Image (cartoon, helix red, strand yellow):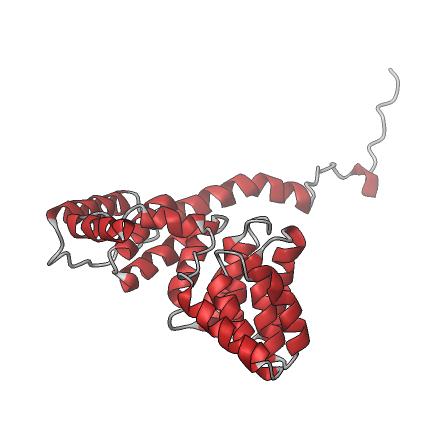
Length: 277
């Protein structure tokens, strides 16, 4: 019989064990972590729509508000439901409640420019810093050629004496659309605020005939002409500014969408009288 093989007693005799690298452990645990996060998300308490008093509203408007409230309660994690509720409330001058809804919609749908834009417009009435943050976020989500958020952002920045920031906003609009009259007028107002009347006068020339800027542009021109000592021309500019109709609002699709929720007999009668006039 051949001799039995000698069993080694050295270190090489130890049984081999397979080791799993930390990276594979992470890959194995990732589905479990995702599942746990989803469970926590579903268990987290959902926001509740604001309490809304509909006293004094027409029955047509009451039904509209109550339907939107019901949808938001049934789908509390749907940004569209919160945004629609916010637009309806804002359309009927319930600004505080609308602001709460837009904030929730923006949190649920952070890549949707509408909610940041509409929230920024409401915040501009009492909190410039918060308004600038929301409008900047909305502006960065859309191209600058027809970017209503960039225009509103520049206007709020100018009104709060952030002239360098406002200048950057208006120049971005003009770089994408050289015919953007409100942006050019904004730059003219900044130039005048910086005591650069010659530059302001050059910028304003393209705004004098535009229906979106003509009235404000002639008012600014009158001040510039007075500054240059051209008193007669300044008086003519004042008379023309007085005779011109109010400047048309620059197209804002977000505001227009919200305005479509304005309903009611009294409102329709008022709108009809304006159109007849």
